Amino acid sequence: MILRLDQVACARGGRLLFANLDLTLGRGDAGVVTGPNGAGKSSLLRLCAGLLRPFEGRIETGSRALLGEQCALDGERALAAALAFWATLDGTRDRVEPALAAVDLLPLADVPVRLLSTGQRRRAGLARVVASGAALWLLDEPANGLDTASIARLEALVADHRAAGGAVLVATHLPLALPGGATIALGGAA
Amino acid sequence: MIALLLRDVRRAYAGGSPTLVVAFFLLVATLFPFAVGPDAALLARVGGGVVWAAALLAALLPVERLVAPDLEAGVIDQFAVRGHSLAAVAATRTLAHWLSFAPPLMAASVIAAALLGLPSRTLMLVELSLLLGTPGLAALAVATGALTAGLRGAGAVAGLVMLPLALPLLIFGAGAVESGSGALKLLAAASLLLVAGAPFAAGAAIRAGMD
Image 1 (cartoon, rainbow over the protein chains, first blue to last red):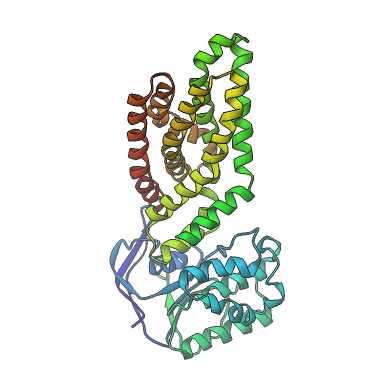
Image 2 (cartoon, rainbow over the protein chains, first blue to last red):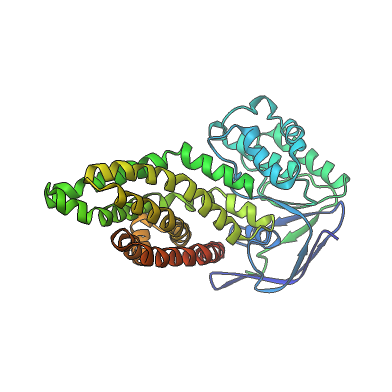
């Protein structure tokens, strides 16, 4: 068991977004969170990341890595150095280079993060998640701004992570190939 | 946390905030002789208080940039995801902020003392009181930065939040320059209280802002 949600409800700004949500992700599992804008997809991921407290219910997770809206890398630092900062915290310094190679950013390792394009920054954020070595990946709209080749690379990375015994929870409105992934549809009732 | 400390200190110096603080501090210190007139005896008498008032105003400058940029960039989120306590993050930020603004300020005080014609004994007391008082100012600045992060016009609100809370530091700091050890002890006590309490307030403010 990597992630377990037990009867979880989420309220933001006095509005109930969803309630009675049960979800279990084990080794190799994937979950796809779908729903209209404002249904609570990002909130669900932030709940799982421990950034929000559930209004009701319980959440259990092991080690996790979050790809949010921002890539959380220092703009003025070189890409490899910015990633190494987080990798040092996670004790996975040696994974930075393979992660950069996996998202095809190795040629840009010495370029300051602020000069990267939207899609490149997204991939840099993904490299941070890949390098973290966490069992649970929480990806919030990971395909935003990515070209077709990068989306294929993202799908391959997720497949590799699952094959290695990890789990993924993805919030997306773009179709992503996640074979055997459970769909969590939010906002159906609203 | 050492990695975070090094990052914060490097960012502060690379961002030029120490230069700004020092320039503003010296500017305020030079304004006083213009305002009260070039009476050397008067300036030497009020000089300690002038240096402290200037230091307090200069400490306000970087407040807006202490927490808000990292909050916007998702950096603080990443610490929370990793299970780090936000109070520890705030305490580290406080130490980094102190390292980036207290030493330049204390160096600039030597120049300010020369501008105001302070005797060397007064300068020693000014430096000692700044050494004791600036950790409290740094802690207060980080807590204020956390409280006002994300607000429109955060800089102005930060001044309103921080200056009243910094009054004890100003009173005992300037008092120490006048009267010596008794006020120095009170200054150290006020500073210690802020250093011990403010990171928790900052952590709670950041956490509350996430909801």
